[in-house]
Length: 325
Image: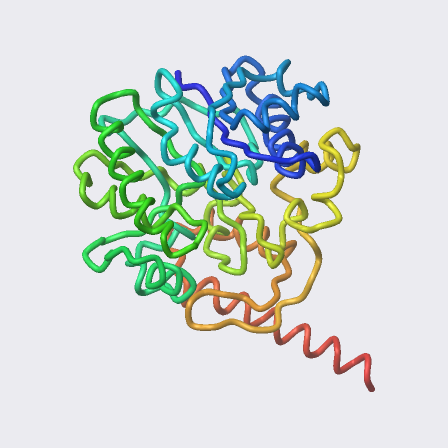
């Protein structure tokens, strides 16, 4: 069985530590015996020690000596793209903006790395406007890459091919970091393309991405891990400032972690564009849509999702019209 790995770099405010602990708390609710590794820089480690943080009781914490002149985001990305060097054995890496929803099963794969498609869309990066803008800025050619993967949840085997992928990831990340963008995915996807025979796909339930892209709804009902992407436009409660400010032991947070698949802000559907983005989305209704999709093996975007959304828009307009009459 794999261990779980997190990367965290923080300051005295402990914002990312608190986010990590929310994810770790959810993980331990359903997987109390699983081993957890936390990799951080020495500055963060010393802060956690001085504040007597609970992380040392919950996980094995390893500090890496980094150049403190590097910015916080750069230090975090450095640790992430070099993680294979710091941890022994197979592991499942998770970003800190994640919530575990159930007991995690073993992963059976004859490949060295496994990930989910970014936003669950099996398209090239250039075909996704939000991603293409970043890719075109970072100086890495992904035009030949058949797919674009998300780095927020990664299963990684302890073998030479995984280490080779990480070595290439680090090389391409150094190139992309010259663009001043604190991103790691374009570099990772270039490395994965170059070693694609060693790459497997994790089904979407391992990394249910919830943002203004709503394609994650297909996997929400069976979600193993929810990834709310630290996006203020995400309908997921933990992405919102009022919940991010709460301590991981706060009763409101514990209640969210106990029922993670239903923790969405109530809002209304007002529009849909060609690339599956909603300007605003009523996620309590989207949960019902997710259940409907699960039951319908022949579901499709055009025949299942769009009519559902259109009906919600229609009913919202009728409701507003009734209020003004």
